[in-house]
Length: 285
Image (tube, one colour):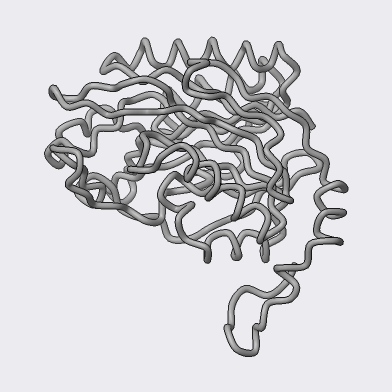
């Protein structure tokens, strides 16, 4: 299956313009042959978590709101699996989430509600004014795996990639692929950013599709840096495709095959050789 990670330009505070840019990029990816398309974290808003709590709550939408219907229609029109990270307001609980919508090629959601909500919410002071995600979001409650054609996938939203337990859990649940939507640099240099993803991929036998933004975002006069480096990584840690920051906005395209991923697992046994008698954890799958 041909996959695409969309490296979007940094978002402005104009949501309609951000959505239009995302739509154009999705159509471009579909025209390039992609059947599975993923956008970066908070794909239709800038990263606003340095602002006071609730400052931009008017940007949030329900998982079945107008924007969701618009992207569902686009997935159907393009005949693609589509993942759209967004700022969610759940009308049933009143809570806000950093979440991801998922649609199949018929434009139907994979499930009622988002397919993922960010589990781990960071707090940091550098650079000023810093960020405080718990002031803006409620954390998600778990991980799920979904079927997209021959591939089974899960989602780790940005900071969630830091936690090895998440990768183990998705592998144990039968995932072939982990989609990692990202915004910002997270304080990493580029070599560490790519190296961390390669390591998680190889030690778990999981392919990785990572979509990041590129270019600065500005919220209330504060700068959020996005350095790009969107990539597709095979289950043995090989970088199959990568778009550097210098290349700007655009697509990362590449092919994955579920049988080939299983073949990699047949020769790299790190997951199978865990001493679960000493370190209990997710069972093998």
